[in-house]
Image (cartoon, rainbow, N blue to C red; front, side, top):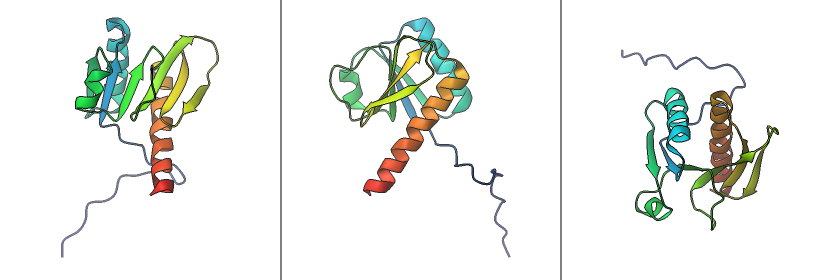
Length: 130
């Protein structure tokens, strides 16, 4: 008889951690991009993180999530986190179906929490529509 390996431990009532497969850092300054990439790689070590300059690069190989510091010119089909102006508020606002806005500066822990919330919200929306 073959035994299955035990499932990873998970706290009761805690939703499973969402998986982040690919991220595009869109037109983000090198210093901030390095910080964001490091924090994302720490939480999701297997994720692909690309730095791109233009929205045109998104259409060739769409990422699961885009992170940008400028407001998108048009609606996106990808999940997008817009790191907006400096603001002491800690809120993240959903502005459109695939667009969330968060104030900066953002700590590494807060960035991970925001990305997890966006991924969970998109999973819930996909479950409801499918």
